[in-house]
Every structure is written in C-alpha cells, then in structure tokens.
Length: 130
Image (cartoon, rainbow, N blue to C red; front, side):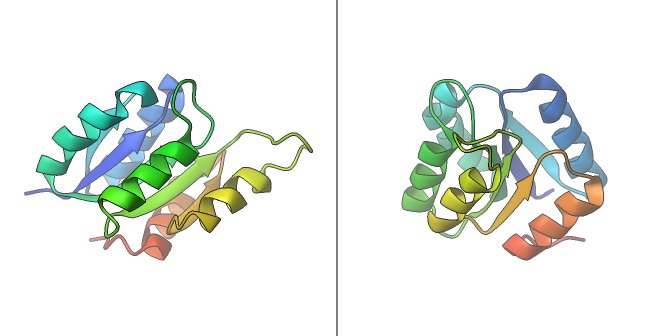
C-alpha cells in the first residue's frame, strides 16, 4: 500500500504541481480542492492511511489555520506541512507561516517552492521518504 499525502489547496495549478511532486517522491496523493469539504473528505481520507497533510493557509471558506487546528485536534500524529504564498496585512508572508507553526504544524514552506524544497519540508515534518 502506497503512503498517502493529503493535499488541501484551492489553486488548481499549485494542486496539480503538489500531486506531481508527491507522486515523484513515491507517495499517493489524495486531494481536497475546496476547504469547505474538509470535514467529510478528511474522514474519508483517513481510511487511506494518511502519513502527512500539505495545506495552504489562505483559502476561501475554511482557512488553512482552521484546517490545521482540526487536524491537530483529531489526529495529532499526522504530520502537517503548511504552505503559503499569501501576504499578511503588513506584507510579511512569514506571518501566516509563523501563525501556522504556533498551531503545531511540523513544517512551513513559502510559495513558490521546488520539489527538493517540498521533499525537505516533508522530511523536516517527519514524513518518512523512500
């Protein structure tokens, strides 16, 4: 059984890139395109033995921050990598990623990123790579 990474990303291009990167790294990718479907999709995805979650921070509907809080409450052992290309009010992208880190994400990665940077973030998070 291939290990599954759950990707929560509203941008179709970034989502496709993440799927491609994860598959190249030996993972199966499960996708939630809209955060408003997180609850039902996460319950279904749990049946796939998720080893990690990659979630965007800024999404319409439920924010990545809310998603991170729910993941950490429901499945504290699942490793979470937060990604963000958004800007905070003061123009600092790091504010969103810092907030995610305070919520207990295992790694944070600013957009844009390369496959190697994603691989490093997954390793930092504790997701075992082949």
